[in-house]
Length: 515
Image 1 (cartoon, rainbow, N blue to C red):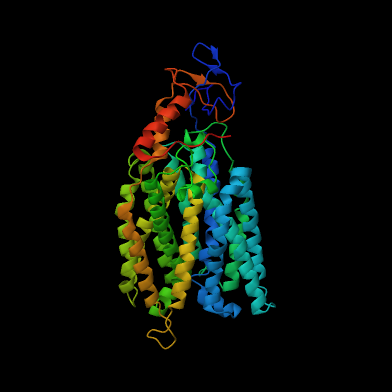
Image 2: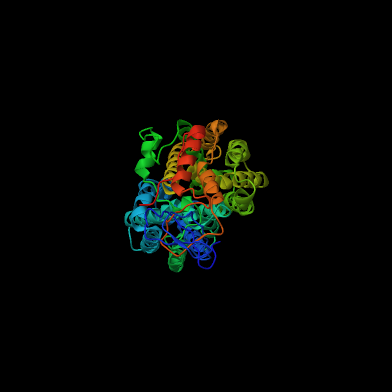
């Protein structure tokens, strides 16, 4: 923490007039190494992200447990109800890739404002579809349109999570912040699954969702774009563009470019994207298809919703306990965590092939808890690992969440097509769909053995923090002023030294300076 007249900083070549004061108050014109600073208001922004993440996560899973009731109330098919969830995943894909672009130009706060406006619109457009005088086609159109607006708000608060934690939290809190923002959305889905069957008819349920969407809007005022001074070296750097990350992934960036990724890093990020996508997609499919998985086997819509909620909430409880350990104890063990938990989660999904049968409530609850514990921890681990190997928090998060929703669409459409006929025993069962579900997760999970997971971003942050001199302070100045170590070594020479050492070992380089 900076002292009273000292703040953390960034690059003095960007702010040549910055004055550096030592313990004798002697002004110098040379560069000064940053003294990084944390702000208490980072927690209010975190609370805003959590609240908005919870509510934006509700619409995509809201109709899963009540799909049969919604189909009857609006005189539509179950497949049409499924598309109330699918439309969110489809729109999510392009929107998630646009979020880093908009954020780099307008900031986190402006993106959040767009998110709450579309969330508010979605709730009441969806409710307009419940007017009984409307035809089934008109009502369904309004329901789809409401879900469309929900799909714009949802990715904003997911994709921006790793960037917010990078800009506001230090190494002792960054992973925890990423975790709580990442799990807010699935927790919202779990809450939605529990609430939707309990609040009355299908039409009344939609009204409740609109009210919740309205009440949470003021939470946007808790979120700020960036602190005056950064908490870490990575937090002082400008975001790379999504385009530069895509170019780096296909090897179109030269080694001297800050966006450069070594071949091994590209492999790691590709595997991480597949694992993250499949696990998120599998959970999304369960949220949308929960009633269709379990009701043919004799389970009520309430129990079906509780199965999905168990998966998500068990993971949340475990994540709250485990995430701080990644910041303070397991700081360099993201790769090992993946290699332990992914096979367990994959095995859990595969076991549902035999577990989903009549009178096996306890067994299904146990499997849901195991899957949830392993899968939910993978959310912050996957997002942090993406930022580590790419040095691009917002771009990597956009690709990972986009992958998750793309796989979710694949699961839902494919498994809907595998639903048994009315003459099957039991009618409309999803046993073939569960086989497909389990096999895909197992095959993808096997790729985890090839992950190395070198945490280049953390190594750079730790190295820059070690060079900071507590006896020298930087007067209040704009974010991104950097300086020299007490030895006289400039930040540029440290970066150059680090660049050489990292490239020798991993062919990766530091983050780009903010311009």
